[in-house]
Amino acid sequence: MDVTRTTVPGTGTLFHFTTGDGRRLAVMVEGDGLRRLLMYDTDDEPSQAVALELEEADQLAQVLHSRSVNDRLAALERRVADLAGTARTTGTTGITGGVS
Image 1 (cartoon, rainbow, N blue to C red):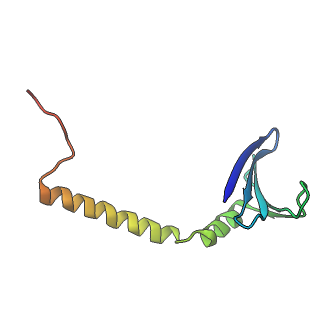
Image 2: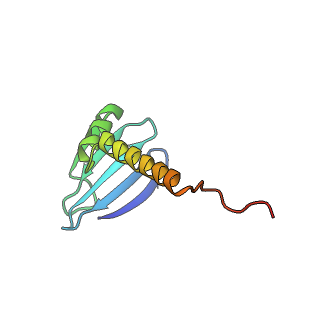
Image 3: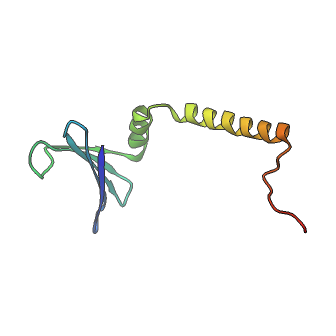
């Protein structure tokens, strides 16, 4: 997916996305936190727009994640625990160098 970011003075930031099959959409992140989903047909002007409050945008983002935030956090916690366990069993401290 191709993504471009553009600052729109006085409004916010516009993120344009082009999918692998050529569909175009955008997300306008306005200064007050409002998000607008914009869908394009063939013109440079959006054919549809959906306004999302901050909480709605968070819920949509949660659904769009390939894994939930909780799943990703649990995986990171397991990885940190594995790394800490490896450091203990090998006797490494992560500190290099020393006093000569």
